Image (tube, rainbow, N blue to C red; front, side):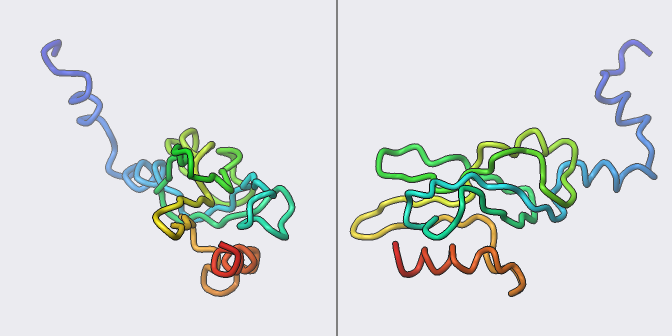
Length: 136
């Protein structure tokens, strides 16, 4: 039938058995990403130029853009160092905030979108959290 919109035709022919696979193509079930750090920033004190973050979920934070904001760590690549990333979300991952600071009033807001101490086993983030508490 020529009167059926293409989207309706696609929806009508998709398979129920493929629903789980289609759903996870837009998710990050658990992946480790390389983060490019600005080692001159206090939050990155003691780190080499690369930090690894453990990412769960599809929330991505845009880079901070105001003059007093600092992008101390940026997701370096959409390719994970390890783990699963859905095919539809992967191209959107690179160049997003991993560690940031926004100056506000007499203090700072520190952005750590991913848990640097996930379940107490992610030791790579201990120094990052200490730097956020004691150096900022």
